[in-house]
Amino acid sequence: MNSKVAETFLIRCIEPDCGQTYDLDTPIYTCTICNGLLDITWTEQQNEDPDRLRSLWSNRKTSNDPRDQSGVWRFREILPFEQNSAVVSLKEGNTPLYHGPKSAAYCQLDSLQLKHQGANPTGSFKDTGMTVAVTQACVLGARLVACASTGNTAASLAAYAARADLPCAILVPTGQVSHAKLAQALDYGARVLEIEGNFDSCMRLIRELSEEGSLYLVNSINPFRIEGQKTVAFELAEQLEWDVPDHLVVPGGNLGNSSAFGKGFRELLALGLIKRMPRITVVQAAGASPFAKFFAAHQHSVNLQFVDEPNPRTLASAIKIGAPVSWKKALRAVEETKGTVLTVTEQEIADSKAVIGTEGIGCEPASATTVAGIRRMRNEGFIKTDEKVVAVLTGHVLKDTDYVIDYHNNSLRAGSDELITSKFRNRPIQVAGGREELRAVLASLTKV
Ligand code: F0G
Image 1 (cartoon, rainbow, N blue to C red):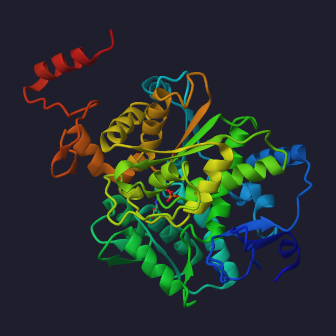
Image 2: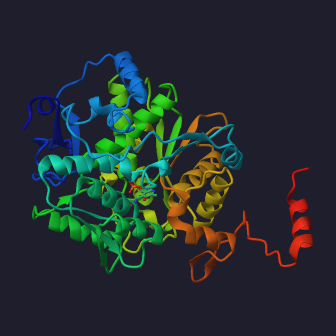
Image 3: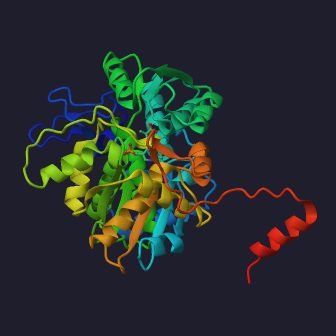
């Protein structure tokens, strides 16, 4: 393998009793010795000048180099690739950090900022990881890339595989993926394989087949995905003038995103770019919350077995996951930053989503777990009124329009017997009576 990058980075098993290392060009997802998860790590402590890095990355924002125009590759000093290597990019990252005054008021906070990952090229945070994973697939000469998905990973992989001209197979649970996400994957030319069962069944199947070596798996168990997603911590820190928030709150599904934020902030700290880490909190939907249950039990006794949720249920289909592969990495991120893990109800998710919508921003249901969780944590005193809080909105509002329409029509059901009460309902108004009636309706809408 090529010189410089191999001297700087390697793949390492995260299990403290193992720590087995592998070269970067080993197509591997878990440790062959102990089956542990894998991290990409520096071979030795880096002695970079933080000010040099800050100005290098900032100056690239005005460059026309395609790598500089990507919010991921702009930070390429911290990525495990040769500095001049070709990349598969759609100019991902560089997503906005918005102030959300209505969401802040809803949570009884002085202020709340929303990092909108839905502004990525395929409408979700997955793109920041996929650009790196598909670039690595090209480095390895992969002939087929694949993933299991609740929809967003599928859309993202489909797009990046198309850019790389790589065949791509996507496993999705039949009938459980939103039309928008499925439409993206089909349009970008992926082969979509519908499987009976749920996301966890798809994940299990594709992991087993990836062991045979005929395909390159790009779910977040692949450490190169996490490398890309960790750059969001760098971008966020930069947007906040290198002063991190007190709390960073993310939704939890397969738990790659929370793991990536943990790794990103850990590296920022090691590089001297920030002085402390934010408390990282993961929010799950109550019906799909194996990590929250584990975390609660783990507070009272260590060495507990992680128990999967055999039948996860939530309308936030992106995070309808019962066997999250990266839970150990996510636990490390939450514990080392003194964050927490909590659950929110379907009603709380729906109302929070509607409030985020009224900001003129919007997001998909899974993303709204963050604001719902922040509201709860504020009520329970875990977050104080004047603390600096960032919620990560992981997906675009148009990712699941059926949910939005059902909410505003007051017909959103979390189960056959559980109707969501649409507290922030905004129904279309039928104007049947012509010009006079329309004039009256418009008058009633005019700001006084
Ligand atoms: N939010 C959205 C919009 C997602 O699509 C996902 C995961 C998550 C949150 C959870 O992130 O898995 O890193 O904890 N979606 C995956 C998919 C599983 O297949 O698109 P996580």
